[in-house]
View 1 (spheres, rainbow over the protein chains, first blue to last red):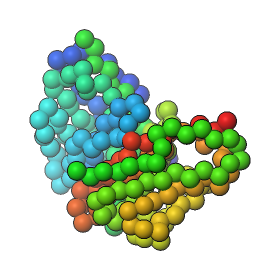
View 2: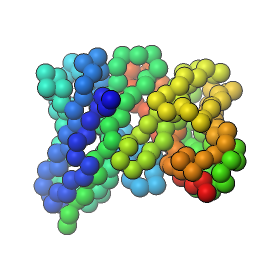
View 3: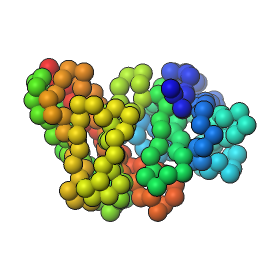
Length: 113
Length: 114
């Protein structure tokens, strides 16, 4: 059973517009959420995170919103740039010593010229 | 900068061979992880280790084993490679004391089993 769900396998957005990637989770014990970005033939790289005690975290063009009551988070990228074309993974972690995190299946973002 | 390196970027092995994938991190991280990534399935955890000589099964440990003899090195072993183990293998490490759950990934090894 998937605990972290990314229901859109792919998304296409015009360059300069806002990209919104969505993620739902089922486990109310998750207390930390992360977004990773992955280019082909490379390992994922950390993008941005949010603690469950917050509802928004911003870093430059990237903002993550958390709606705990809906068990939903989203990543906003504005403005979208060609280099943003990649696969984005949503991930979540319960409070455990081992730093284990659970990944969604990913959403492929295409930025169109 | 945290650096996680993996011994090979591409590997081709035959069915039944024993395969070793090596991962080394240089930031004195306590936790290390092995994942595989397959299209449409995301990243799935195979094994992880939170200390030297310690290991825990992840979600898909069948057909794999691991070894962690030194803190900086975490090896993934395919005892008898099979075609369904053709995949991208990713190693990661993290520092629990950071409290951010952030994992640092290596570049990946694309393994093909023929």
